[in-house]
Structure formats: C-alpha cells, structure tokens
Amino acid sequence: MKWDWSAVSDFMPHFWEGLLVTLQVLVIGSLISFVLGLVWALLMRVPSRWMTWPVGAVTEFVRNTPLLVQLFFLFYVLPEWGLTFSPLTTGVIGIGLHYSTYTMQVYRAGIEAVPVGQWEAATALNLPLGRTWTAVILPQAIRRVVPALGNYVISMLKDTPLLMAITVLEMLGEARLFSQANFQFTEPLTVIGVAFVVISYLASLLLRALERRLVH
Amino acid sequence: MSIETRPTPETNIEKSASELIRLEEVTKRFGGNTVLDRLSFSVDAGRHVTLIGPSGSGKTTILRLLMTLMKPDEGTITVGGRQLYPASEKQVREVRKNIGMVFQQFNLFPNMSVLRNITEAPVTVLGMSKDEAAERARELLDLVGLADKCDARPAQLSGGQQQRVAIARALAMRPQVLLLDEVTSALDPELVAGVLDVLRDIARTTDITMLCVTHEMNFARDISDQVLMFDSGRVVESGPPEKIFSDPEQERTREFLGAVL
Image 1 (cartoon, chains in turn purple, red):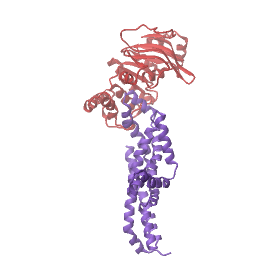
Image 2 (tube, each protein chain N blue to C red; image 1 turned 90 degrees about the vertical axis):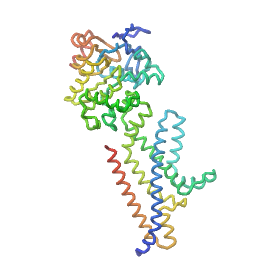
Image 3 (cartoon, each protein chain N blue to C red; image 1 turned 30 degrees about the vertical axis):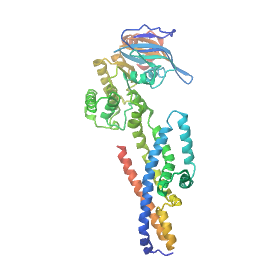
Image 4 (tube, one colour; image 1 turned 180 degrees about the horizontal axis):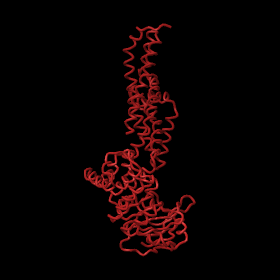
C-alpha cells in the first residue's frame, strides 16, 4: 500500500464540500433534536393519558427502530404522500427527529433532578405554572443536562454518514465518489477519518466551554 | 384564638371578628397513616402562633396544607373569609396571594441573583414594575442585614444568609400570613441567632400573622402569643407561652418539654 499525497490534494475540493454538508447536518440536526426533545419531554408531563400515551408510543417507536430505516421511510414514502423535500432536508429532519427521542430522556432526567423544594417555593410565591417552568425549572434542568446533550451531538456526528444512503453527499459520500472514480481509497478515507476526530474534539471543547459558562 | 381538640360535628368554633385562618375538621392521611385527625382551629389576624410537638405530630403538615403544597383528605380551610380548600384553582391562586412561606431548606432559586429571587414574584405575580420591585427588594435586604448581597448567587451565601434572603423573598409579596417551617433546623448553630433576630424584628414591627413550627423553644417563648402543643395529629394543649412552658396542664406536654428543654 502506497500513500499518495497528490490523491489527497485532488480529494480536498470534494472534501470541503462534504465537510460543509456534514456540519450543516450536525448543527441543524442538533438544534432540531434539542428543541423537539424538549417538546416531547414537556408533553410527557401533561397530566393526561390522551397526551402521554401517543407521545410515548411514537417516541418509543422512533427510538427503537434504526435511523437508516427511518431515513429510507422519509425519503421514499413521504413523496408518495405528496411531501417532497430535498435529500439534505429529509436527512436533517430524520436525524434530528431520531435524536430528539434520546434528548427527551435527557431532559426528563434533568427536570426530575430539580429538587421538589423549587416547585414548592414557586407555589409559595404564587408563580404561574408557565413562569415556574421558564424561570425556575428549565434553567436548572438544562444546565444539568448540557454534558449529556453534548454526548448525543458527538454520537449524531458519527451517524451522519448514514445520510449517504439517501444520496446526501456528506464527507463519506464525497470520499466514496472520489474513490470509485480514481481507485484510490486510502487517502480520502483517511482524510475524512481525521476530520471526524477533529470535529468531535472541537465539539467537545465547545461543549465544555458552554458547561463552564452555565455553571455560573 | 380558639381551639377544639375533640372533634364534634359541624361548626363548633365560635367566630371572632378578626379571625384570619380557620381549619375545620381537617383530616390528612399518608397511606394508612392519619397525620391530622379531624383537626379544627382558628387563628386571629396579627397573632403569632407556634406549633410544637414531637416529629410526625402533624405540625409541618398544617403549614403545607395552608400553603396548598398538599390537599387535605377531608375538611375545609379558610383564609381571610375565603375558602382555600375546597376551592377552584383560580380561587386558590387568589387566596394564596396572602400567604407566604419560609422553608427549612431555604429553597432559593439557584439560577437567579439574590435580588431577582426577591423581585421575580412581585413582578410576575403582582405586576409591580421592575424598578419598584428592585427598590423594595433592596429595602428588604437591608432589613435582613444583607444589603450588600444583591448581586450574589444563593450558592455564594451561608445557610443563614440564604434563609434571611428567603425571608425577604416571602415578605416581598406582602403576605398577611407568614408560615415558618423549621426555618433554623438546617443551619449551623452559630447562624441560628441571626435568622431568629430577623424574625423577632418582623414579629415586633409588622402586623403579619405568623404560624411557626420550631424546635427553638426560647424563640417560641419570645415571639408567640399562643403555643399549640401537637401530638398524633391533634392539639393536646394550647395557651400563652408563659403558661405552656412553665405550667403545662397535660402530661404529654410536660413529657415533650422535659425532653427538649
């Protein structure tokens, strides 16, 4: 096996394009999973089985089926229902939705970890329920769960290559295309492997900085 | 203040003109354990009432029922002539405006500055302007001796300081009734005096009605007009502190005081 630096430089323009797509998926997918996960977690606290049962069933289903299956479903089945999105949009929604079923559990744990005394103090001050959530409970709950949410961001990063299956050209997609055209596999795969490590590392630094800020 | 220890059916307490709090035939059970057993009593406005008795005798439960942190299984609770239980959620919110509580574990909001802990409810519940609420919060912090701690976080304060902030926070809502639930039990001994001094001050200078669960018998003697001795969810004996502490009538009271004094 020979290492060919010229293959690396030939691959780089494709790599940058793939990197951009991967980062888009990661950032928007994370935001969707953070927001949607919080929505699920809050809906699960509505004191009515008419709410918790369907939300619980749907999220349980999504959490326990493979992301790849969900991506295929969104990509091939939704257009039959008249809903057509670009592959990238479909992928971002799919991965965000999938991970929201995990982040909801993180939020739930964070909400349950807020001491009951905080609820009691809010009641004693006659704070309305909505204000109790936004000013007292959620700020404390979310602070606690940032590290756990961060782990899912890293995990999501490593799932982004699945989007290749619905024709999204993220980093692995670009590498595969390049490899098949040039019969050079080592260099592009190595480059994107290194890129995954670097992105993970940078993301974890970012999250640690965020964590430190939130402690104050 | 009037007391009924033996429950007899229906309204058995005569109503005084200045009556503020009234519990009638209140029963509270936890599982099979009856914590309050058809308890009836009333408190006149402006009185300072101390509830004493062994742990598990139902003292704290009374405060928690009045704060609507829990609901009784039976009976009625009235504050200021309006029913607190049973009542609609809307009415509960309205009546609850008159009641404040200070907790054993302070329960300050750790995500807010000291000042915002105090201004949060006046602004969002009473509709006070931010400036007005902040000004009043500063006055209250001054009253509890913490004028310089406005911008501190609760975690940066000692337990005693946190509890004094919690007192200021409760007072900021201008309650008619202040419920004090073992407010010094979680404090290091050297911090207790500072908190009790603040409460003595409030008892002396305001007309707030106070219901106080405490194990600080000297404090109880100092501030209360009335002491209620509880045992097994009933009032065993009640009277002015001089009487209860020096010449109790009931054997159970003597036993309890002998053990704690």
